[in-house]
Length: 307
Image 1 (tube, rainbow, N blue to C red):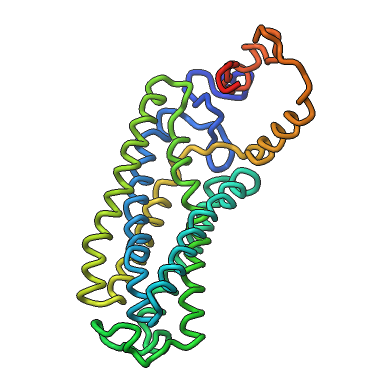
Image 2: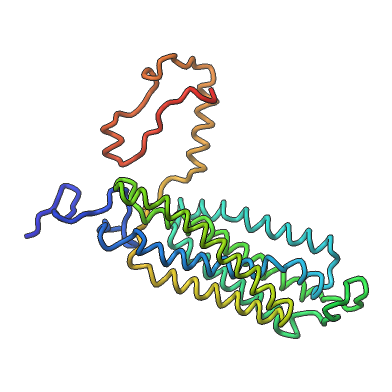
């Protein structure tokens, strides 16, 4: 009979110490999960996803003025509103992941929504019935007497905001999942985590560079339909690439929402606003080091700066 430790782990096997688990909630072996082996799939995802996203975002103002015949001010304002939504939705995506679904499943559901939005957007710019009649590449909106119908404008923006909802669940979770692949309680892995974020930024800008050069050229000189098809295919490849790595990913269990923790700090600060802070930091309430080691939490020592 195999000997087990008090935590139910098999003796002689090296498990992670940061609380990560398999997708089914079991302890994970350090040797065959996580680290760079898992992160390669995530870096590949990020290259393709950024290519897909900026394949739309970079030339969006031009599409609205040339194809939907909107004025420059109106189209710029609409693009700004959409971009703002893209950067606000991750707040809700992170909350759902931390509190309800976990990072992996929030990411997967959001990726499907993201891909649906991209597919609809590609159909909108490709099918004659869904896009307004063209006035020609060099005709400004002031000289064009053709206008997009309410349905055509509506379905285009519907697709755009579906994409925004999808990015809300993918953007905040993919990078944190990458960080979860390195155990902070193992010195070598902790050092590798810093390198991971360097490559993470490289993958973002590499995908952006490709879209801002090649895809923009395709859209300007070949056609919007082909440019959007390439963007959609890039996202599809990104999702498949991420799914392939699923068996070797490490997953942090769900915790209390950070918004709840921040609210607790604010409430405590208000309730204790008249309490005199002791001069000696040792007199402040703090857990013992043994309790921190047992729970695998990091202690943040008291500091008098910003007092």
